Image (cartoon, rainbow over the protein chains, first blue to last red):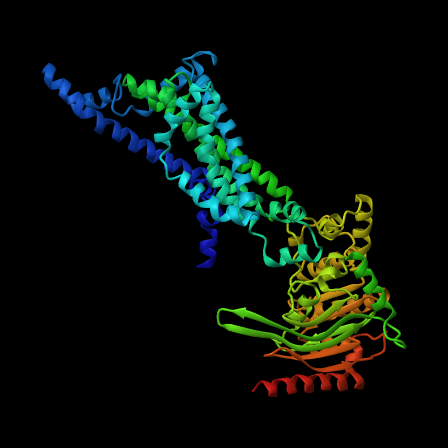
Length: 308
Length: 279
């Protein structure tokens, strides 16, 4: 029986299906496939009432296939079909010059620049706060509750006020939006870095004490390197919510430019296809930013000799 | 204060007349009590001890007898609650600030993000030595512990025994006169431990350093030491101090000699005496 099993084609060479599923591509493709199926079903289901209403008012006969076809070709659907969004993306990314105000690339760049500025400011602020909290007992007790409290305020509520106040004292455009990003993204950095800077074990700290190392040396030679894995875990969260912050910051600016502006304009005029195109662009940007951070993490940790 | 410290050091160096080697460590009626939530824990009780320059002293006793605590008091990682202690004639804190000792912990405590070489260089960086000399020192001491060629490896690429040898090289690299070792080979297998014992003995003979070595292995203590301090638990105190003068060029075979058996027997007696007191 054993020889039989060995001789069977399945034992000799795994089928193409199992080979595909051995990697990460296979399972991912299946998930994407089912998402598309759900999306198309949703398109028909959500748009149907509006269409049926129209058919009845115009008193036309309609078949189900007619309904399916029409539900994917509406100008202002409740839920646009994926291929409608794809056409819109193609039109607004490849179909226009990148400097055009109707190009998604232009708007993505506007959002990206405030995302990155806010991310850098938030990371610096987050690290500075964490260093203070770890080294100064008073700050540990006084600052951390405020840091946590800051995140309980809904950002949508204070974003317009930040924009208005800063606009009044002459700051418009990039800086106010970046400040909102910073406000959101310093938090995971602070929390992660407080934990990271405190992660050296007692033995590693005793060793520093036997060398009578000063606080500065303990920080740079022990605490900082110990905290790097924690820092990257935080940065991956921070860059994603920094993008959210930038988009939220664009909403109250009067919809001049950026992904947020596209979302707002789209909702003013019921341009759902445009909204979905902007949303997908934002999602793709977030994915790329997090992936880039993951790549940087791998590179840095490899240089630091992390196993694997 | 610095001048005072130096003067005291000089006094200590002169020492009592007729004594060849100056005392490196003097412990007088030393007690240490930890205050815990469950009440006080008497870790050390009225310990008296003198360690002379060039001695190899082992602290031996069962777990909880305060041997590690005593070593940590010498290293100024803990502070006594009563009694006096001097290291090189000054307080343990002054000695620590003067980088008087190298400490080898139970675990290698290597920094995983540093290569073997850079781990050995760590104390040298902290002490402000220049890059060329650091490299030179690291090479010399890695060679001394037979780890030449492993400079660029990361700690996880080394076996446990090799990692502990790196930590010994690190403790030696800044050339302290005093080496404090807290069960450095406790986590290793017996074959590796035997091998490292021999290497450590050769190292001690060659460098003439003062070594204080914490262990709970009788053969290890007898084989390595010139003086064995037998301790007993609750409260941690010294029950016996045994001079141990096996021939200096001894190998592991010395463990089968009559002298070895006699000293081991006396250590065992001392440990047993400590235990009966405990009941």
